[in-house]
Length: 162
Length: 160
Image 1: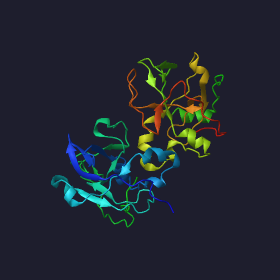
Image 2: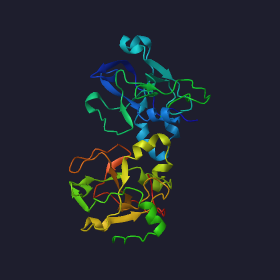
Image 3: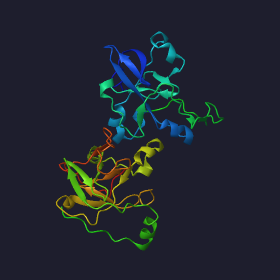
Image 4: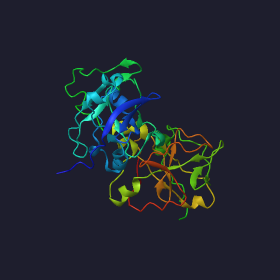
Protein backbone atom coordinates (compact mmCIF):
# COMPACT_ATOMS: atom_id res chain seq x y z
CA UNK A 1 0.00 0.00 0.00
CA UNK A 2 1.38 3.37 -0.99
CA UNK A 3 2.08 5.73 1.86
CA UNK A 4 2.01 9.52 1.72
CA UNK A 5 5.39 10.73 0.46
CA UNK A 6 5.52 13.47 3.09
CA UNK A 7 2.84 15.14 5.17
CA UNK A 8 2.01 18.73 4.29
CA UNK A 9 3.53 21.63 6.17
CA UNK A 10 1.67 23.09 9.09
CA UNK A 11 0.37 26.55 8.28
CA UNK A 12 -0.97 29.29 10.52
CA UNK A 13 -3.07 31.34 8.14
CA UNK A 14 -3.36 32.91 4.69
CA UNK A 15 -2.59 36.47 3.74
CA UNK A 16 -2.65 38.73 0.71
CA UNK A 17 0.29 40.90 -0.22
CA UNK A 18 0.55 42.95 -3.40
CA UNK A 19 -2.47 41.10 -4.78
CA UNK A 20 -1.01 37.64 -4.27
CA UNK A 21 -1.99 34.87 -1.88
CA UNK A 22 0.51 33.54 0.63
CA UNK A 23 0.33 30.87 3.32
CA UNK A 24 2.10 31.70 6.56
CA UNK A 25 4.07 28.79 7.98
CA UNK A 26 4.80 28.06 11.65
CA UNK A 27 7.99 30.12 11.42
CA UNK A 28 5.93 33.09 10.33
CA UNK A 29 7.31 33.03 6.80
CA UNK A 30 5.00 33.73 3.86
CA UNK A 31 5.04 31.04 1.18
CA UNK A 32 3.57 31.92 -2.21
CA UNK A 33 0.57 29.92 -3.39
CA UNK A 34 0.02 28.73 -6.94
CA UNK A 35 -2.75 27.48 -9.19
CA UNK A 36 -2.52 25.14 -12.16
CA UNK A 37 -3.38 27.51 -15.00
CA UNK A 38 -4.44 24.88 -17.60
CA UNK A 39 -7.60 24.36 -15.55
CA UNK A 40 -9.06 27.24 -17.57
CA UNK A 41 -8.59 25.35 -20.81
CA UNK A 42 -9.73 22.14 -19.17
CA UNK A 43 -13.07 23.72 -18.25
CA UNK A 44 -13.45 25.22 -21.71
CA UNK A 45 -12.51 22.01 -23.47
CA UNK A 46 -14.39 19.68 -21.11
CA UNK A 47 -11.43 17.51 -20.23
CA UNK A 48 -10.09 16.59 -16.83
CA UNK A 49 -6.72 17.16 -15.24
CA UNK A 50 -5.61 14.02 -13.46
CA UNK A 51 -4.00 13.92 -10.05
CA UNK A 52 -0.21 13.94 -9.98
CA UNK A 53 0.26 10.16 -9.61
CA UNK A 54 -1.56 9.70 -12.91
CA UNK A 55 0.75 12.06 -14.81
CA UNK A 56 3.36 10.62 -17.20
CA UNK A 57 6.39 9.36 -15.27
CA UNK A 58 8.77 11.78 -16.96
CA UNK A 59 6.82 14.71 -15.51
CA UNK A 60 6.75 13.30 -11.98
CA UNK A 61 9.66 15.36 -10.64
CA UNK A 62 8.17 18.55 -12.03
CA UNK A 63 4.67 18.13 -10.69
CA UNK A 64 5.86 16.82 -7.33
CA UNK A 65 7.37 20.23 -6.59
CA UNK A 66 3.86 21.58 -6.11
CA UNK A 67 2.27 20.33 -2.92
CA UNK A 68 -1.49 20.56 -2.36
CA UNK A 69 -2.24 23.24 0.20
CA UNK A 70 -3.87 21.62 3.26
CA UNK A 71 -7.13 22.89 4.65
CA UNK A 72 -7.13 25.46 7.45
CA UNK A 73 -9.90 25.94 9.98
CA UNK A 74 -12.32 28.84 9.52
CA UNK A 75 -10.72 30.49 12.54
CA UNK A 76 -7.38 30.50 10.74
CA UNK A 77 -8.73 32.18 7.62
CA UNK A 78 -8.90 35.95 7.20
CA UNK A 79 -12.46 37.22 6.99
CA UNK A 80 -11.69 38.73 3.59
CA UNK A 81 -10.84 35.33 2.10
CA UNK A 82 -13.03 32.93 4.01
CA UNK A 83 -16.07 33.19 1.73
CA UNK A 84 -13.98 32.17 -1.30
CA UNK A 85 -12.29 29.19 0.33
CA UNK A 86 -13.57 25.63 -0.13
CA UNK A 87 -11.83 22.29 -0.27
CA UNK A 88 -11.58 19.16 -2.36
CA UNK A 89 -10.90 15.59 -1.29
CA UNK A 90 -7.95 14.19 -3.24
CA UNK A 91 -9.66 10.86 -3.74
CA UNK A 92 -7.37 8.56 -5.67
CA UNK A 93 -4.08 10.16 -4.65
CA UNK A 94 -2.26 7.78 -2.30
CA UNK A 95 0.78 10.05 -2.10
CA UNK A 96 -0.92 13.30 -1.07
CA UNK A 97 -4.31 12.18 0.19
CA UNK A 98 -5.19 15.10 2.43
CA UNK A 99 -8.01 17.49 1.68
CA UNK A 100 -6.84 20.41 -0.41
CA UNK A 101 -7.69 24.07 -0.02
CA UNK A 102 -9.50 25.59 -2.99
CA UNK A 103 -9.75 29.33 -3.69
CA UNK A 104 -12.49 30.50 -6.06
CA UNK A 105 -12.55 26.98 -7.60
CA UNK A 106 -8.75 26.90 -7.99
CA UNK A 107 -6.98 24.14 -6.03
CA UNK A 108 -4.00 25.73 -4.28
CA UNK A 109 -0.39 24.56 -4.14
CA UNK A 110 2.78 25.61 -2.38
CA UNK A 111 6.42 24.81 -3.09
CA UNK A 112 8.41 23.59 -0.07
CA UNK A 113 11.50 25.68 0.51
CA UNK A 114 10.26 28.51 -1.64
CA UNK A 115 9.70 31.63 0.45
CA UNK A 116 8.36 34.97 -0.70
CA UNK A 117 11.80 36.34 -1.54
CA UNK A 118 12.68 33.31 -3.62
CA UNK A 119 9.50 33.25 -5.62
CA UNK A 120 10.00 31.74 -9.03
CA UNK A 121 7.09 32.57 -11.27
CA UNK A 122 8.86 31.82 -14.53
CA UNK A 123 6.66 28.87 -15.39
CA UNK A 124 4.97 29.77 -18.63
CA UNK A 125 1.46 28.40 -18.99
CA UNK A 126 1.74 26.01 -16.08
CA UNK A 127 1.67 26.98 -12.43
CA UNK A 128 0.86 30.63 -11.88
CA UNK A 129 0.64 32.73 -8.72
CA UNK A 130 -2.71 32.64 -6.94
CA UNK A 131 -4.09 36.18 -7.02
CA UNK A 132 -6.63 37.87 -4.82
CA UNK A 133 -10.03 37.96 -6.52
CA UNK A 134 -8.93 35.97 -9.57
CA UNK A 135 -11.70 34.71 -11.84
CA UNK A 136 -12.63 31.07 -11.29
CA UNK A 137 -11.29 28.71 -13.95
CA UNK A 138 -14.74 28.16 -15.48
CA UNK A 139 -14.97 31.88 -16.29
CA UNK A 140 -13.66 32.58 -19.79
CA UNK A 141 -13.20 36.23 -20.70
CA UNK A 142 -15.59 37.28 -17.92
CA UNK A 143 -18.28 34.90 -19.15
CA UNK A 144 -19.05 31.84 -17.12
CA UNK A 145 -19.09 29.13 -19.78
CA UNK A 146 -19.66 26.14 -17.60
CA UNK A 147 -21.70 25.86 -14.49
CA UNK A 148 -21.15 23.15 -11.95
CA UNK A 149 -24.00 21.19 -13.48
CA UNK A 150 -24.51 21.41 -17.21
CA UNK A 151 -26.38 18.13 -17.54
CA UNK A 152 -23.34 15.97 -18.18
CA UNK A 153 -23.29 13.45 -15.33
CA UNK A 154 -19.52 13.10 -15.72
CA UNK A 155 -18.84 16.80 -15.61
CA UNK A 156 -17.15 18.46 -13.87
CA UNK A 157 -14.85 15.77 -12.49
CA UNK A 158 -15.04 15.10 -8.77
CA UNK A 159 -11.47 16.15 -8.23
CA UNK A 160 -9.12 18.41 -10.14
CA UNK A 161 -5.48 17.58 -10.44
CA UNK A 162 -2.65 17.77 -10.24
CA UNK B 1 30.44 12.82 -34.34
CA UNK B 2 30.30 14.09 -37.92
CA UNK B 3 27.31 16.14 -39.02
CA UNK B 4 24.63 14.11 -40.66
CA UNK B 5 23.81 14.89 -44.29
CA UNK B 6 20.33 16.34 -44.90
CA UNK B 7 17.77 13.63 -45.55
CA UNK B 8 16.08 13.45 -48.88
CA UNK B 9 12.36 14.09 -48.60
CA UNK B 10 9.72 12.42 -50.69
CA UNK B 11 7.59 14.69 -52.86
CA UNK B 12 4.52 13.98 -50.71
CA UNK B 13 6.37 14.76 -47.50
CA UNK B 14 7.82 17.93 -48.98
CA UNK B 15 4.33 19.10 -49.98
CA UNK B 16 2.96 18.40 -46.52
CA UNK B 17 5.85 20.12 -44.74
CA UNK B 18 5.34 23.16 -46.94
CA UNK B 19 2.05 23.78 -45.11
CA UNK B 20 3.86 24.39 -41.83
CA UNK B 21 5.63 27.64 -41.00
CA UNK B 22 9.15 26.35 -40.41
CA UNK B 23 11.46 29.19 -39.50
CA UNK B 24 13.94 30.13 -42.18
CA UNK B 25 15.89 32.75 -40.19
CA UNK B 26 17.94 30.28 -38.18
CA UNK B 27 21.54 30.32 -39.29
CA UNK B 28 24.05 28.51 -37.12
CA UNK B 29 25.19 27.86 -33.57
CA UNK B 30 26.99 30.07 -31.08
CA UNK B 31 27.80 29.82 -27.40
CA UNK B 32 27.18 32.59 -24.86
CA UNK B 33 28.57 31.72 -21.47
CA UNK B 34 28.12 27.99 -21.55
CA UNK B 35 24.71 28.17 -23.22
CA UNK B 36 24.10 27.01 -26.75
CA UNK B 37 22.26 29.47 -28.98
CA UNK B 38 21.08 29.53 -32.55
CA UNK B 39 22.01 32.65 -34.49
CA UNK B 40 19.44 34.73 -36.35
CA UNK B 41 19.73 38.03 -38.24
CA UNK B 42 18.24 39.76 -35.15
CA UNK B 43 20.54 38.10 -32.62
CA UNK B 44 21.04 34.77 -30.87
CA UNK B 45 18.20 32.72 -29.40
CA UNK B 46 18.69 30.28 -26.49
CA UNK B 47 18.22 26.59 -27.10
CA UNK B 48 16.60 24.18 -24.66
CA UNK B 49 16.48 20.47 -23.90
CA UNK B 50 13.76 18.45 -22.25
CA UNK B 51 15.58 17.41 -19.09
CA UNK B 52 13.53 14.33 -18.09
CA UNK B 53 14.44 12.70 -21.40
CA UNK B 54 17.65 11.14 -20.07
CA UNK B 55 15.88 9.30 -17.25
CA UNK B 56 13.12 8.30 -19.63
CA UNK B 57 15.65 6.85 -22.09
CA UNK B 58 17.52 5.00 -19.35
CA UNK B 59 14.23 3.53 -18.07
CA UNK B 60 13.03 2.62 -21.54
CA UNK B 61 10.08 4.98 -21.14
CA UNK B 62 9.13 6.47 -24.51
CA UNK B 63 8.39 10.20 -24.45
CA UNK B 64 5.66 10.94 -26.99
CA UNK B 65 5.62 13.93 -29.26
CA UNK B 66 3.55 16.85 -28.02
CA UNK B 67 0.38 15.74 -29.82
CA UNK B 68 0.42 12.55 -27.77
CA UNK B 69 0.62 14.30 -24.40
CA UNK B 70 -2.29 14.86 -22.02
CA UNK B 71 -4.56 17.61 -23.28
CA UNK B 72 -3.94 19.90 -20.31
CA UNK B 73 -0.19 20.08 -21.02
CA UNK B 74 -0.30 20.78 -24.75
CA UNK B 75 -0.60 24.56 -24.53
CA UNK B 76 2.54 24.61 -22.43
CA UNK B 77 4.43 22.24 -24.71
CA UNK B 78 3.55 24.12 -27.87
CA UNK B 79 5.51 27.08 -26.53
CA UNK B 80 8.64 25.02 -27.12
CA UNK B 81 9.25 24.74 -30.82
CA UNK B 82 11.40 21.93 -32.19
CA UNK B 83 14.52 23.46 -33.73
CA UNK B 84 14.52 22.76 -37.48
CA UNK B 85 17.63 21.43 -39.13
CA UNK B 86 20.48 23.89 -39.65
CA UNK B 87 21.99 22.91 -43.01
CA UNK B 88 24.36 25.90 -43.06
CA UNK B 89 25.74 25.55 -39.55
CA UNK B 90 29.53 25.36 -39.40
CA UNK B 91 32.19 25.46 -36.72
CA UNK B 92 33.16 23.18 -33.84
CA UNK B 93 29.70 23.02 -32.28
CA UNK B 94 28.06 22.02 -35.53
CA UNK B 95 29.96 18.76 -35.30
CA UNK B 96 27.62 17.70 -32.49
CA UNK B 97 24.48 18.40 -34.49
CA UNK B 98 22.24 15.62 -35.62
CA UNK B 99 18.68 15.21 -36.86
CA UNK B 100 15.66 13.32 -35.63
CA UNK B 101 12.32 12.81 -37.35
CA UNK B 102 9.09 13.93 -35.68
CA UNK B 103 5.51 12.76 -35.68
CA UNK B 104 4.40 13.14 -39.31
CA UNK B 105 0.80 13.70 -38.18
CA UNK B 106 1.60 16.29 -35.50
CA UNK B 107 1.60 20.06 -35.70
CA UNK B 108 5.40 20.28 -35.90
CA UNK B 109 6.32 17.51 -38.32
CA UNK B 110 9.61 18.91 -39.59
CA UNK B 111 12.91 17.22 -38.86
CA UNK B 112 14.40 18.42 -35.60
CA UNK B 113 17.98 19.31 -34.77
CA UNK B 114 19.71 17.42 -31.98
CA UNK B 115 22.89 18.23 -30.10
CA UNK B 116 24.75 15.32 -28.61
CA UNK B 117 21.57 13.37 -29.25
CA UNK B 118 19.37 15.82 -27.29
CA UNK B 119 16.42 17.19 -29.28
CA UNK B 120 16.66 20.99 -29.30
CA UNK B 121 13.85 23.49 -28.76
CA UNK B 122 13.24 27.21 -29.06
CA UNK B 123 11.02 28.98 -26.54
CA UNK B 124 8.51 31.06 -28.46
CA UNK B 125 8.59 34.00 -26.02
CA UNK B 126 12.36 34.45 -26.09
CA UNK B 127 13.70 37.55 -27.79
CA UNK B 128 16.95 37.59 -29.78
CA UNK B 129 19.81 38.72 -27.58
CA UNK B 130 17.73 38.60 -24.38
CA UNK B 131 18.15 36.18 -21.48
CA UNK B 132 16.49 32.79 -21.68
CA UNK B 133 12.94 32.99 -20.31
CA UNK B 134 11.77 29.43 -20.91
CA UNK B 135 13.50 27.44 -18.20
CA UNK B 136 11.12 25.35 -16.08
CA UNK B 137 12.66 23.25 -13.34
CA UNK B 138 12.56 19.54 -14.15
CA UNK B 139 11.09 20.09 -17.60
CA UNK B 140 13.04 22.44 -19.87
CA UNK B 141 16.53 23.83 -19.29
CA UNK B 142 18.90 25.72 -21.51
CA UNK B 143 21.29 23.51 -23.47
CA UNK B 144 24.85 23.73 -22.17
CA UNK B 145 27.76 22.88 -24.44
CA UNK B 146 29.21 20.64 -21.73
CA UNK B 147 26.03 18.60 -21.39
CA UNK B 148 26.83 14.87 -21.65
CA UNK B 149 25.33 13.24 -24.70
CA UNK B 150 21.96 11.55 -24.47
CA UNK B 151 22.40 7.77 -24.13
CA UNK B 152 21.49 5.94 -27.32
CA UNK B 153 18.08 4.33 -27.21
CA UNK B 154 17.47 2.85 -30.61
CA UNK B 155 14.35 4.98 -31.00
CA UNK B 156 14.23 7.04 -34.20
CA UNK B 157 13.22 10.14 -32.25
CA UNK B 158 12.03 11.47 -28.93
CA UNK B 159 9.30 13.85 -27.82
CA UNK B 160 7.88 16.15 -26.75
